[in-house]
Structures are given as structure tokens and as C-alpha cells.
Amino acid sequence: MTAVIELDRVSKDFVVMRKKGRLRRERMTVAAVDDISLRIDTGELVGYIGPNGAGKSTTIKMLTGILVPSSGTVRVVGLDPQRRRVELASRIGVVFGQRTQLWWDLPLIDSFDLLRHVYRVPADRHRANLRRFVDLLELEPFLHSPVRQLSLGQRMRGDLCAALLHDPAILYLDEPTIGLDVVSKARVREFLAQVNRDEGVTILLTTHDLSDVERLCSRLVVIDHGHVIHDGTVAEIKTMFGDTRTVVVDLEEAGPSLVVPGAEVVEVDGPRQWLRFRRSEVTAAEVIAAVVGQARVRDLSIEEPDIEDVVTRIYTSG
Amino acid sequence: MAELATTLHLYRVLAVAKVRADWQYRSQFLLYMTTQFFITFLDFLQIAVIFGAVDSLAGWSLLEVVFLYATSGMAFYLGDAFISQVERVGGYIKAGTFDALLIRPAGTLVQICANDFAFRRLGKLLQASIVMVIVLARLDVEWTPGRLVVFALMIPSGTVIFSSIWVIGASITFWTVDSGELANTFTYGGNFATQYPLDILGTWLRRFLTLVVPTAFVNYFPALYVLGKPDPFGAPGWVRFISPLVALTMAVAARAAWTGAVRHYRSTGS
Image (spheres, chains in turn blue, yellow):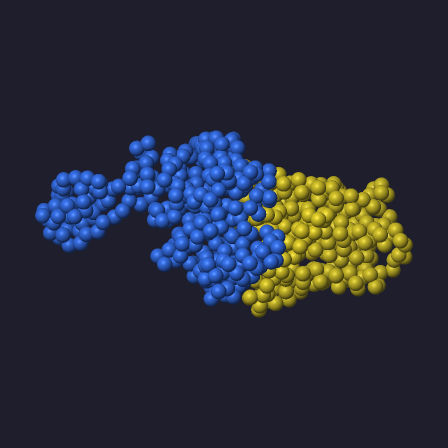
């Protein structure tokens, strides 16, 4: 396998001014990314996760040539993003979930045509790519509608097409499923898996949605406070940290904390209590049975840990 | 040269897209065009009013002053139409959209200027061009080849000088977001000052417009030559011919400023 992305001991420091006294301000250096080494091979589909402010965006910005690292070396498709930003730009595709790259007031198809000029894609190749992606993403029904009239899901599909028309070797996705409904999410995931499998596009995605990672990624890189704190398969991380479930019960009336073997009450809010347990130790049925034996339950639900939880647990345990 | 052709092509494609997007809101578009045209006309009226009260201004006749007005106007509004949008870069930085420019395989300057191209600004250019045609028809100048060449270079040089000031002003914005007004002082102020003969301004302002923000080279010095007028301040004769050189120097400075600004952005992310 050949590496498409290589980070070697990369750090990025920002200088921030902090108030100190009435007029004096103090210069402080904050490391957003601290000594990260990472290698991603051609065709991998990697989830890059971590809490807000962990350094995810900063890493992506260094990989796309937006930001220059303070130290260390970055190579993307063999290029130094710092010196060869423009050349690199035509080899990568970028999708920001919260911000569209399409021309707001023009029909969707016009954005694709404009991008052909921006990326200087030969006309026949553009036509072939466009036909393929329009089919795969089912863009035809709204291809001639102004982007501002599209739903969030439609726009995301349009953005995905726009990011791939110039045959990039790498696709960076920042929160690609944010705000999408279940159907649109599934569609986007299916498309990404397909592009990765059939076109051999290497994909690096950041997300807060653990189900994105579960369904899509073969590999998971977790970052916190600028450090890589876990790098491995999704299965690994799930058995290590994603094993807990929480039963949320609404009791008829507020009472003392329940006592359930194998589970612990982590929060009490009036008649509502949260009981956390490990699936490997007890089953949800056992926990619920124990609860029902002690109090009258009006409602209950089971919560899976979200990515923030998992990351926090990994971080605190590491 | 190939690079320039690609850049111009990209500018045209993106600017046409912007015009088509603006055309979605037609009535607003047309209203803007019309008002801009009349606002500029009021500028011109102001000069006519001054000459209603006096016959000449520091030895310059009405037609000669109108010639200054038209050359400065054309140069300024060419820059205004095609480059001045760069002053919006502060907004890009604040909104985080400057990043989106950096992930595209094209220069950031051409993308900003073309993305924010506003067709309505051509209204002012049209107005200045009409004034130019009228004044050329009526101005009593003996058109020697030398004068023709100097005249032909006035507007391109002036456009580059004004545009460079805009770019340098926008570059400063990278360090001090919200300093756009500073650049405006030099561009709009420079345009206003060059509508009148430099003679009526005080010494310090005159020096400032010659040496620091060289808008005097947009029209005043070359106009002295084209119109065959003596320089009341006795500047060396060659000063009348160096506007293209001044423009080139400004362009080099503007390019360096912009490159430095983008480098600063890429190292600090803000």
C-alpha cells in the first residue's frame, strides 16, 4: 500500500492574547495539534473524531494547505501542501457539512459547470463524471433548481458531487451528515462507501455521529487536546469503550437512588434516574427487571453512548 | 502569459456567474445601476457649479478640469468595477469563508474580485467614459504622437495605481480586520483629490499624493504634458512621463503585500 497522507511529528501552535489586568495582555502559545504522526494509505476510509476543540479542523486545514504547520512535515499525495497548495487543490475534494460550496442563487447544474472551469477539467471527462454522479446521487429531479431552494439533504448530495467532479484522490468530509434526516444520512453513507470501494477514493471524515463511523469506517483515529489517543479499528474501540448502555427510567414518584446489581445510578433528576451498566456484565433485561421490582415505572428508554462519551472515556482512561 | 490568460478566463467565468446570480433580483439590479449613474453625475455637476462662480481654477479652464475629472474617473471606476471588491476580504476572514478560496486550485485575489463582481459598478464607468468623449471632442489640444502615447497610458496606469491601493489596503485587513475604511480614505479620497488640479491643494497634501499614495500620477502629471501646461511647482520634466513606472512599482508592491497577507493567514488561521 502507498501512503496518500503522511503526517510526521506535526504540531500547530496558535498565539492567543489573554487579558491580564486592565490594559496588559499576555501572549500565550496554545498547541492545537501537538506532535501528531499519522499515515493513511490509498483507499482507506478513516473516521477522525474527537470533541470540539480537539484539533480535528486544524489537522484537516493543514492537510488541505489552508494552514501551514508550526513544525513537522506534511505530505499529501506526495506534495507539500504549504508550497504547492494550488497543485494539491486539484487532487483533493473537500466537503464542509455546514457550509456549501455551491453557488447559492444559481441552478445546481451551473455550479458544476463553473467548477469545471475552476478545476480545468477536460469537457469530455467532466461530462462522463457528471453523468455518473448525477445517477448515483439521484440529482436529476433538482438539477435545474437554484441551490437556495434545495433541502439540506439535496444540497449535501450536490456538494458531494461538486467535490468529486475533478477526480480527486482524497475526499475530506467535515460533518457530512450533520442536520440530515435518517433517510438522507443513509443515502450519503451509502454513496461514500460506494465511492471509496468503486473509485478507490481515500476518504477522511470528521463526525460527531458514531453511527457514521460504525457503518462506514474501517479505521478510527481519535484525537483530544491535540494528541492522537487512539488509532485502530472500530470493532476494537467498541469492545474497549463502547460497551456501556444507560437505562433511563421515569418513575411514578421521586425516590431514593435505585439499587441494581451490575448497574450504577449516574444521575437523578426528580422521578427520572439514569442507570449505567456494561453489556458484558448484565443484560438490559436484567437491569429493567430489577428496576421494575423496586418501583413503579412510567416510562423507560435505553441510550447508547455517543461519540463524545466514548472519546471522553478513552481520554480519561488513557 | 499562460498564467495570466488562465486567470483572466477564470475571472470572466466567475464574474459572469455573479452577474447571473444578481440578475435573479432584477428590479434591485436595475435600480442600483440607475442610481449609481446619477450619483456620479452629481459629482460632475459640482465641478460645473464651481466654474459657474469662477472662470478658472489655479490657471486651469473648465474643460481642462473636466479632462482631469474624466481621466481620474475612468481609472478609478475601472479599478472600482474589477478590483475594489477585494476590500471585502475582512468579511471572508470573519465568516471563515477565506478557507474555501484556499482549497481551490486558483489564486485567492482573482477569486474574491470575481466572486463579488458587481455589474452595477459599470454604471459609473460608463458615465466617466461619456464625459471623456465629450471633453476630448471639445478640448483644444494639438495631438502630437508623444501626447497620444502619454494619454493612452494614463488610464491603464491610473487603474493599476488605484487597484494597487485597494489591494494593499485589503492586505492590511489581514492583520487588523475592520481597517477597510483606511484603504477607502486613500482610494475614494485619492479619486476626489485628483478630480481637481493639484495646484489648489496645500503643500503637504500635494507631497502626500505624489510620494506616499501616488494618485497625482493618475492624471495630474501626465495631464500637464498632454495639455501643454507648465508645472507651477517646478517638478522635473520627466515626472510627467513616469506614471506607467509608478503603476508598475505599485503593482509589485501590491502583489508582495497580498502574498504576505495570505502567508500570514495561513500561519495564524485568522
